[in-house]
Length: 499
Ligand code: B12
Ligand code: SF4
Image (tube, rainbow, N blue to C red; front, side):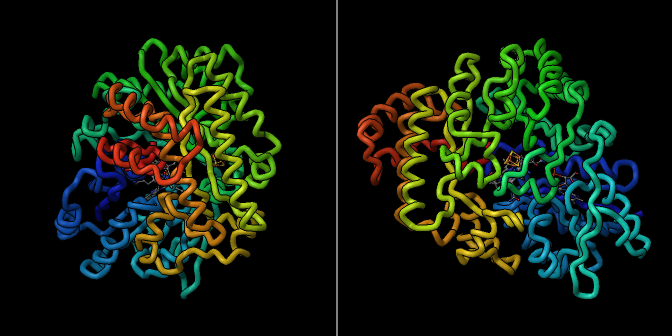
């Protein structure tokens, strides 16, 4: 039987997390195929390891998970080299990047098949077909080329997560000691990365989850989540949890059940949510989840402008007034709201784009007044190809287009796009980007993030003091002194580093 090499390209230079994508893919072939996991986050020279593995007899499949941004810097050149040096190896990519950008990926000529969305059912069967040189266009969740044209096979509904095979933690531990993945964060000294649900019931027009899951969501049961966490706690010492779900808090019932189960374990946890969804939670539920260890929750607040919220498909249910009131409400429960904002959305005129940025800056200041503990994360708007959405059409009409060649995605300019640092959108002028960045620096100076565990209380006080005049007088221009301190003390930037 052939074997499989599963690769997780490097995503960060420090703090590796349990590679849940590749682990879940491994679970789908456990007992069916031999496999090796190589984690780019933990290898100095992953190519040598990949090469050595591929030189072994019988390795015929290279499975790679890819999200936009830094992972492309290994996924692209390594896949290309595999095609050159090991042409018999089939190269299969999965994850958000190839699912959302299939044309560029398949045109490269070095990716044979893309897993479009969940790979749990189609991947083992695809390997079987490839091994036996059979066709696979009847399998779901695949994208590939046939006679030069792109074929997208039918999409399965999200599977019942409880029915999927258990994650092979023991096996991962044989490749890389699992303890290495339980890093120190603001939440705890051994933080577990856990992913408990797929999709999201909403359709925000800028979000990469929407084209893949079409407003569907399914979650693992509270009991099963608890069992996994308890296993990682008892066997590897995990003492905190980062939930990597797109939207962990969709079901109040599931969250409450989980909170009751986890409470006696004294673990601190964090996850991502919608403001409108959680605003419907009862006071009892919010009180319980805080007592059960939930210290901070990430929310896409996006903007203080109701018309834009509506355009983003957040409106109707999420409003500026609600965003503000909810920050105040969470204050009562001692849960820190981590609000992310997207500045620089398109508008009819330059003046309108600029005014919108000014208004959002004022709105953020307002939120900080209502609940100073609120953590603010600022992104610049980067379009995703959710074809047909009102916003996407507007973006296209303005002259914006995505790179056509796969390798262009690793040019420095597009890397910045992926990291949402500089979106290359024609309506956002350099002076506007400067304004956003300067405000962000002053805000982070006056309110340093609590998630930076390296920043001592003294350093915090110094940065705050130095930033106070600028914040109070609203003079944000060229905050060199704050940037110097941030750089010098390696200030953590959650908007770039991920959580
Ligand atoms: C963990 C994570 C990270 C980690 C990376 C960990 C690692 N791999 O080493 C960190 C924090 C570093 C990170 C960073 C970024 N991330 Co990230 N990340 C995630 C997150 C939260 C979870 C991924 C995960 O583990 N999922 C669990 C697994 C089980 O699900 P899955 O990946 O979908 O896998 C299934 C299928 O996709 C498929 N599949 C996936 N890969 C493969 C491979 C093969 C071979 C096969 C067969 C199948 C397959 O099968 C799997 C099982 O069904 C996702 C959101 C999410 N909930 O998925 C965002 C997400 C992927 N990230 C995203 C982004 C944009 C980023 C950043 C580039 C930007 C940012 N500012 O956040 C940064 C880059 C920063 C940097 N310096 O690298 C976006 C991608 C959006 C897009 N446009 O495509 C997502 C979707 C978040 C979002 N909703 O916006 N991220
Ligand atoms: S709520 Fe979050 S995950 Fe869901 S569609 Fe909107 S941005 Fe995407």
